[in-house]
Image 1 (cartoon, rainbow, N blue to C red):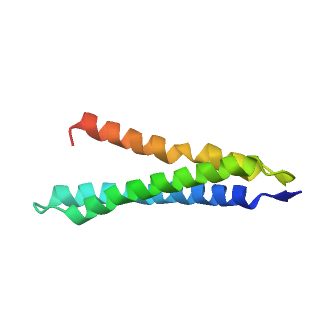
Image 2: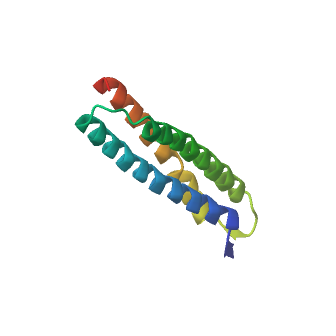
Length: 107
């Protein structure tokens, strides 16, 4: 049996969105450090971070759909589809966690 191409795609997209989330987290930290050290505002960085949140969530939705579709393909291995489905909620949970922490810290 071969691995499902949709399952592999789901796994790759989920992994990529997690990597992008890590890069976005670094960008948020750098933005906060830069903004604390100067009086000017960095609206472009904040807009880019906001847009990247929507792109990451869209990628996760696509990965989840591809993983679910891949589970129903006959005569293919399902391991990458299952891993892709398991990885896809992590960025959403991480983004929600960052929103909650930001709200509670009064930022």
